[in-house]
Amino acid sequence: MKTLVIHPEDYTTRFLKLIYKDKDWTVISERVSKSYLKKQIKEHDRIVMLGHGTPYGLLGHGTFVIDSTYVYLLREKDCFAVWCNCNQFFEKYELKGFYTGMIISEMDEAYWCSVKTKPDELEASNWLFAEALQEAIDNDNILETARSIYDGDSHLVEFNKNNMYYEKGQ
Image (spheres, one colour):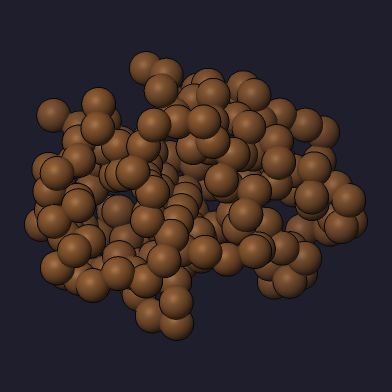
C-alpha cells in the first residue's frame, strides 16, 4: 500500500513522527502548493494526516493544509487522521478510516478539557499514544489494537482512548 504522510512541521506534535519512523512512506512536512498536494494524494492509497486541527481541517504553516477542498480525493482513500476534533470533519464529509476527536497532547488542552494531569504524565501519554498508533496503523483491527496498547490508569489516557474512532470503508 502506497502511503502519504501529511504532518506539518511542529515541535508540539513531534512525538507523532514515531508513527511513520522507519517506514518507506512519502512524507510532506513543509508547505507545498495545493496542486502538488492533490497530485500526491491521487498517487497514494493511504493518506495519513497528523498534527493540530479543527473541525474544518488539518492546520499547518499558518493555514489549513487539509480542508473541505480535498474531500473528493480523500473519499477514495484509506485515511488515518490524528488532529483535534477531526471526528467532526470525518463525520460531516463521511470519510472512512481511523480518526480522532479531541486528543489532549498539551497542558493547555488538558486544562480546557478539565482533565487533571502533570507534565511528565502528559509526555509519557503522548509517546505511548504514538507507539500504539505505530503498532496499529498496519493492523487489520486498528482501533482495537491502538486502544489495547494505549492503556493506563489515568483520566488523560481514558479521555484520549474515548476519542479514537474507526469507520470501515466499502
